Image 1 (cartoon, helix red, strand yellow):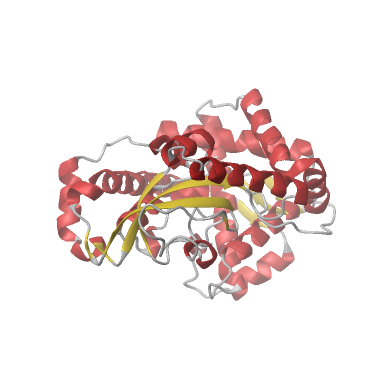
Image 2 (cartoon, helix red, strand yellow):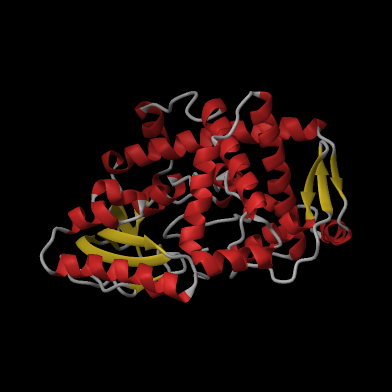
Length: 360
């Protein structure tokens, strides 16, 4: 799946992103696959219909459960969550229809490989339990993966990077937003990350922890951290030897941050567990409060600005399509939640999935 890491990179560098500028790109391209499972779902009925395309109550409840799980710790009422979920489900259908209008299709082999990867991550028992408890079939999962692939291809073809952001534009943004580039105490770190989302079967989780422990053993035995990260880490930073750049306090969840932030320079943490998986960190540099220089942040800033520009194009496309779309809310409970929602509630404030390292 595509994860937009613009906001993640800027957070590391000290750029604070306004909540209203949170990544629509990330939300719209996230598959509606549960982060938590919904036991006991009934036989699927149609909950929403968009231009004749049916969204079932199973899909709706999975999306609602995922949004609530990702919104834990935030004061968000059910009506706002309902609006956000409907916005995202409807937007997904409109993007899919746009992709099909453009003649785009999925690669069945690639989609099947992604489903197989999910099976491997969950383990045979965990995967079977996910199907049983979510009310989805393997055919449903494969169809959703194929649809997701088509949407991603459409976004890349239609919106991504059509008007490249220049260094001059980035400099102008930097000069006009000085407060955004101030930073507190920071450490520069490398990481080895092994993906192990919560909910895996015990034996699968244990096997993934062993992988992290083996990486730590190699590092403690004298192997270069960057080399080990490049070989075994599942963070995109593996291509940079696990280099995450400057991290401020509060960026990682406490259970992870407490294990590395105060380490002496050059020291390596133990294996740390977060909701997303297992982490090993090495602290390479430390600095106090200050301002991030333009040279340090310019590449990340250009990516941020490019991402926002792409988001604006996606938003305009969805708004234009929705203005003429026929959207029918058929689920009575959903209708009631929407009717009770505050008039100004906006579902775009409730992301379906966090980027690696971000607290949900």
